[in-house]
Image (cartoon, rainbow, N blue to C red; front, side):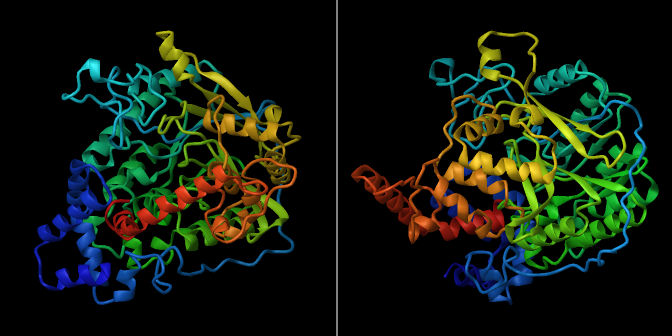
Length: 580
């Protein structure tokens, strides 16, 4: 019905403003978005939306897929395409490199900074907007329910630049850093105001602060979904030039120019990716995951390996294998999240499996919490051999309700360049703001080997840890505390299911998480739910026969779900078509 309606008004030659006005109306009255936000987003996505609709208007099934989940098999997140991978060589050698020095390499990874130039100490942190901690002229001090702190706020807020600078000051005191990985998402979450000029200003400011404290340290960047203007927008080359993110790729090329050869610079300018030689026998590949973003609606026109990016990744890994070199991957969106299209995730998983001995580390971000994902020999069977690990480094931003964090990886100074340990640091903002500290100290939150009693950081060790996290309450509580950088956080039900699921889910196969559904809380004899309770995961935490209270809670949840059903199609349209 939504498709018929939208196609009807389109074919009536309504003006573009009329179409956007309709979208704004839907946003305001069906999704309950703030009018200013809706209007701004509608204006920002105007050209892109109409271009895609124009291409799909004669393909009703494809257009339907932008509105509704079950429209044949034309959605990018359910379609299937495959890249060609070279067969494994049975005689392939994986050399051991002499150590560059006695101590390990120390690599800083900061990700999801979300710098907010409008952050205002003393402003409302408990607001009704998509992003808080901004000055609101209509509010006076007496009406503020939660004041934002000077150094940041554990709320729906992003980071002031002085806290990011303080973080780098503290890192500088922790000893030599061999190189820095900057993991994407540099702008605030005020995405309805995004402009190219604004993004370049933010990236420039972060670059300036980094070079102020690490002038002689190599810095390697990757792109996050928030770098797109509009957000999540990364048009492949089959889209007209005026829509493309050339301005962003050119800026990335400028930042990386001191470290890259001409071939790599060309790759940056074409697809926002590059390869760089870090040390003898070790390469870094920066991969643009914007091409897997579920809400990158350009992909509804043609989602097959955008700009040949995964084919390029496979070729780079093949060359590294032929040269007997090892690779670390730096990217942003983990493939197993709902924000990454399944065909991309599945092909990425295949690449990891094929080159698992060449790839020694995967460094990602995006999810803001601290986690990891184990990859298996058979991507659909987590009882097979664990072959690789993806590390999701915690965010610098506090969005949402997190303490800011960064991580330092220890890497072999030769040999196979494996990750041998990592140390995660955080800033306790509640304590810092309450004590009116003038120069905060970032504390060591935990070190991986020591915290979890790991013999090493091999895939097998992480796979074993998943079992401990799943079945041992003390280990689970420790993991959740570290993940969210908060004490006394309760993460049960759906929160628990999602936290456990991410650990094994490198692509979108729900069976990889099916055995977690019964462990919404740790019990001796977990109740096995069925039917709708299975489908909604562990939204209702039932163990044994349900009590009257539990039945009431279940009924209330189902009532809420039914009430939301009417607006779901409209909301899906906005998320996947207008407002990612």
